[in-house]
Amino acid sequence: MDKLYRYEDVALCLYTKRSEEESLESSLKIVSDLENHKTSNDFCQLPRSMINPFILVKCWVKQEILDFEAVVQTINSKLRLFKC
Image (cartoon, rainbow, N blue to C red; front, side, top):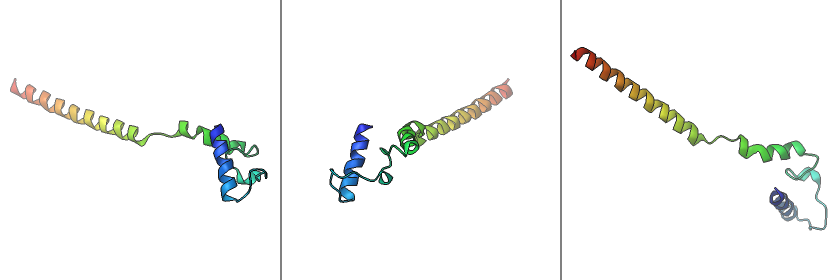
């Protein structure tokens, strides 16, 4: 997280054309702003709250495969029943 704070400070220094000796206005900071603690916490929690969409697709495909296997088993059972 310290690297992110440093990155934000350097980026603001470069893009606002201020020197490192001058203090940056806290309203420009997002992550390292002490007054904006909620946004900083939300930003830190973002990787934990994200869901990989490929996992959802994998589960959906797996469920579809299981449904097809159930249909095949049902058809095979029906055929065996009529053969007797």
